[in-house]
Image 1 (cartoon, rainbow, N blue to C red):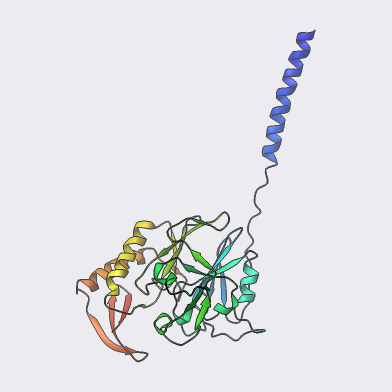
Image 2: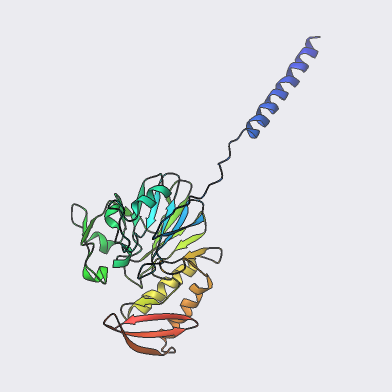
Length: 297
């Protein structure tokens, strides 16, 4: 009798363990599917790319800028600030849109310092710089960076900015269930960076590559541009979606590979140029397989 009771108790114990395990498995909470946020704006075309990722196009701007917000569970990055050509609403041009798209602390990161990528910089409480030695050397002891005419290219605003964060390069950064890396891709400018979203297989390339004419500011930049494209090709693959800072946001991956061939063509003098003048500057224009590169002289 005692043996039978032990057997029954043993079976009941096994049943309870299995029932508890199954019950826990069945009650595991899964994340709610992300619901895209719809933004109505007279200036920005805010498009959903994937969960917690949006492009902010400015089709009415002189530069047809595209900025991006990349949101994690604990932090977000705003990649560029817009052209600033829109009319403010209650004194603000972009911040109200960002506040609708991100409910976590948001840091502004500029793809580079040119005038058409930083015009709403004053609306951000946190500005990050890529941790490049030559940028650190030019920041004052109290964290102020003074923009030069060469930095801005055209115009004189902004004159300076408070640097709140130094973002490490070539290092995994966790935004909260979202791993990104920031890499330096000189060529367009020395400080140019890209954001590589390793979690979602996306790369945001700023003015390094986009759907439109590409601009270089010195013949010597060709070598740097080519070095950067080699690095990007070695880092990415055609599983990645590419996004640029002007025109139609998404770029075909094969355009990255075509850019490499284009740069080789220019460097080897196999591509012929046309001399002309843009915005009062003498330039050389190169054409190659539906791509155009403009080099300032």
